[in-house]
Length: 78
Image (cartoon, rainbow, N blue to C red; front, side, top):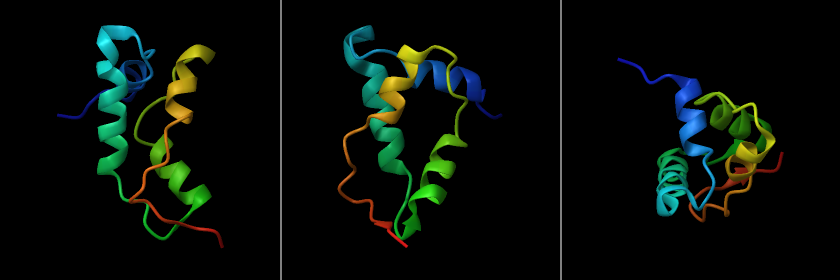
């Protein structure tokens, strides 16, 4: 079975204080799992955003779009 993209977005978009930050930790692990090596930025962000539905509330978008840089990811600037 597949995960519901809306529920995934709502869960990983929770604020840092929610349940001692577990949702933020899940988000970081989720991003670490993805491979953005040698991808153009727009392709990488499109791939990232295609894995869940963005929550409707602006406050829930902040954690999803303000991740610390992932050291293993190398994006092409072309």
